[in-house]
Image 1 (cartoon, rainbow, N blue to C red):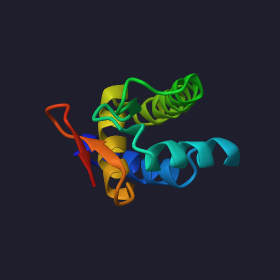
Image 2 (tube, rainbow, N blue to C red):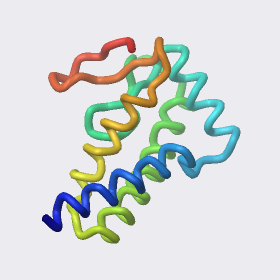
Image 3 (cartoon, rainbow, N blue to C red):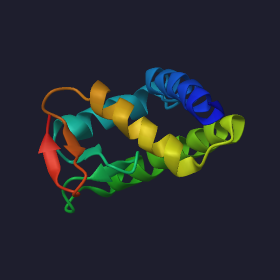
Length: 116
């Protein structure tokens, strides 16, 4: 089944994406700090989202920058494998949940924030 095989390739590419998110070391540290502080988490759509609405502008900018980079990478993976962007984002979310550190937030299917 071509679609299943393609999704397998996407899974491998997504794993590589998670291992090398493509952001600078300073951004990564800020991302981890914001996650540890409970300000942001892994949204169910495959992107970073605000857990709290009252956050510093620097955190909002970080979320926008990381999500822009993720969207670009997801689109590359989708194009390379002939699948929809939303399918790549869904797979990325599943992998991100697996990789989320204890104490960080993930969003469930209903949109609720849960601490892992």
